[in-house]
Amino acid sequence: MAGAAAVYDRALLLGPKRNDVLTLEEVERYGRENFGDPDYVSVYGLRPSDWYARGVRLLGRTVVECTRDRLGNLIGQDVATIARVAVDAAPVVVDPFAGSGNTLVWIRRHLPGSRAIGFESDRAVFTATMRNLAVLGIELDFHQVDYEGGLRGLVLPDGSPLIVFIAPPWGDALTKTSGLDLRRTSPPVSAIVDLIVGAFPQRPLLLAAQVYERFDRSSLSDLAAAFDSTTVKLYDIDEPGRNHGLALLTAGWSQ
Image 1 (tube, rainbow, N blue to C red):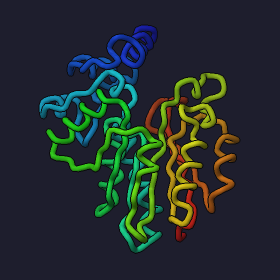
Image 2: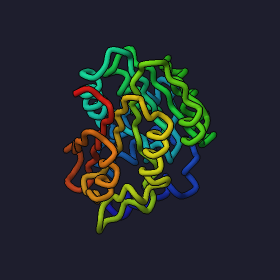
Image 3: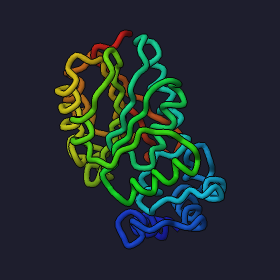
């Protein structure tokens, strides 16, 4: 079964099904064969059979790449724990690689009153996500633009702190031997961080970069030098060796 799952996983992410809308059977098959759970791709607070019945549809690449509910909830909790102690003004939360928008949905659930902004450069993913959000009545400030254009054009209210969830495509940055190297993502996480710090030098910043259970800690150390604090959270919700985590970096943020 493992071999079949690996082939199916690759077909969804890289093959002809990459930009296809998947059936409910295909979504559940992906979860069952790769993670032993047909409900693995639960998003927007709904398990696959429920979101599919409501009219939500996901592309093959989104099924593989999206932040599912269980992980999104934990990310939202940890971001909110830091954000709540910091400032009086409502934060602005940005996801420069928003995809399904599910991470933003969960962060905002834990930070009521925050403004959530997502950027997505791929037209097919953007169109599908906009439709899904409309079907479910979820309001996000969602734009079809790449991360550079979106961040450079971002206008923030005076006094509002900025929270950015950073999860660019990993591609070859994740290997079985060395784990995840944040310097090799596409684009490198450092390039995204430099852009944010340069564009908002006086703004309280909370950056939440998605990491893997095994990752090159030196690639995080390179980023941490410019920040006041760094915390790493790992989420033990998958089998060992396949868990995700979060690196939380703050600058000018009250503690």
